[in-house]
Image 1 (cartoon, rainbow, N blue to C red):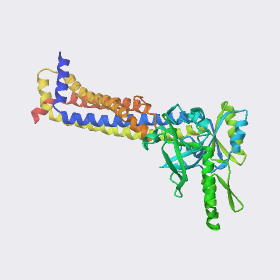
Image 2 (tube, rainbow, N blue to C red; image 1 turned 90 degrees about the horizontal axis):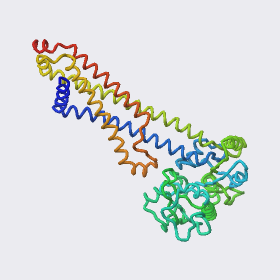
Image 3 (cartoon, one colour; image 1 turned 30 degrees about the horizontal axis):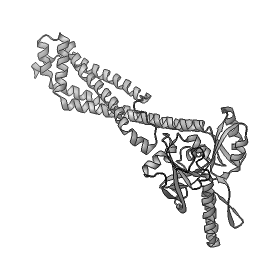
Length: 435
């Protein structure tokens, strides 16, 4: 009966200190919501990166390209290609018995900041999970066939962001995304298909026929032949980096140039062998995408840990604030607790009441913050998917979050016990009498 009275007293005290209790619970909840966001977004980024790396075990690019540049410019479309290589490299790889499939790509143009990547139909067949829209005269299995010379296939997020649909036309800007030298081409693309969402970087891309990329730059180079020789020579040097062409004498001749080859190998041993061969020949560079992505994830994990430690520090400060609030409340309620002592309630039940107050506030903050944080992530999932392309799992509990719960519970128990001991050692009746 005595402990039932203590519980009633605890909730009575909490209900009469609504503002301070609400502030304490809100502070703890906010910190846990931040932890939930850190964990889920980091996990989503890692899952997206790993899934992308599994699709194409090897990337072959021009000589001198770093591993990170090869992966970021091909799988994630977030970096500029470091140069070009001959299409014959892809043809040679396709004939290699260790290779199951090759996918040459050519990046040089963009539309509204979205990279336009030249690929073959096989690549679309590899990455697409179907089409939400497709033109009547377009065959899904050979999307860049006879009728797909100027065809553009849009990722789901790109189509939604720019409200584009099958039949719409647009013009690309020459140069990679963010290139200061970018200028508009007069080559008109027609949207012939929109892919269903794949929850990856492909959702934020535009794909066109690899041959049309060669046509665009061949046309661009013919168009510039009437300019003065000196200016023509200057642009020739730039075009050799960004355009699919080379300089022969004082004239440009469009060649079959690509920026990289995505390779599917038959097993990891072949991946390692091909990486070594195509990195040591002096003409190309190659990288094992799985290993490179693991390196990137290592850096991401460091950032996650740093953010986690910041959150843990915030939680600890919040718990100290709650502890101070409880101690302030104790000083204000000395008369009430002294009256309880005179009614025959012992020191332990009274000190237990203080322990329960602080512990209940801690538990409430953890529960509300954890559930509220994940609910908020679920609510924001469409926006996060749309803006960041992260395949978010809003109700996945990560290590950083679980560790935060354990540390907060430990801190709550420690501080609650400290407050409990302080009250237990205090002679409340004598203190009230002295006052």
